[in-house]
Image (cartoon, rainbow, N blue to C red):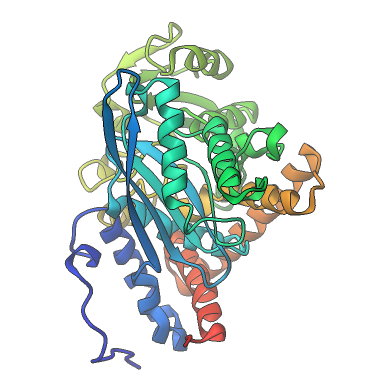
Length: 431
């Protein structure tokens, strides 16, 4: 049955799938699941239009006395299942298309692991490395004040993302609280422990990548203890996932980040590499490894590839070169739809971002709950709850993939979109 409606105006050009960029990739992913939504396909257009998008000017006085203006965004894609939830990134390449897509992937991710959130995302187009600490604080606080009209503990809860951290969240929480006239720890997650943060939050995304990665490996008969791993991005996600895989006996043979690419056939010393990155800010210069070209990273002989950097890294141009049997997406949107098809044709299993990196938002949910109750759990409790939720979500996705004979990404979207649209249907339209 067709659910086309002649009264629906066509999407503006920047919302259409053929418009290049992350949002176009997301729309193609949604289109692939519509045939599996049954009667809920009537509501599918909901998924293609963000509920709210805010673009703000962020002016600050620089240390030299001049005034600089930065462009900031906060997009709430969907709030049918609960308040918006998603990170804030500071990056020179941030665009509205990117933030819209990231907010939509958060909707899918939150529904996939069944936490009661909608999807949101924010960002500022800035290279934070060019700012002093004081300038960074002033920019963060001004941005928080500008988006304060749409965020809140029951409306939209930001969190750390690319180039943001616990300190940025502390500034955001304090700014919002000062404007509200009362301390509001639940307005953001990923905060310092002393300000209502949760134990286990910093490692949660990487731990989730490892947890579902092991589950996927088991399903395809791969022994993680003998696996060779290649990781792109070695921060809180790729670094933690690499550490956990190494502890399980795997060899991390190649790592790439913004500074370059290193390789060691016998396996990199992951604890030493993490210590080096903590000081140098990059894997470049690590003495116990061979330097290879960035392009050669895609030819590395490995069993598991973990893209944990930025979007659109695996494309039609390099997907045919990947030698891994399993790709675990630690980053958001690292694989284009064309690359997805190539990997599937080559029988390479892709564990999609919307399930693989959902550990961070899962523990963010735990933090939010703890803030509301002012009762905090032990790290062992948090990790155990995280592992249980991630395993249950993976099991549901795997079952759907087998039932419909589709990829894990499409299966995840089917499960998540049904949950989102069922909530939309139950709530109805107001007024």
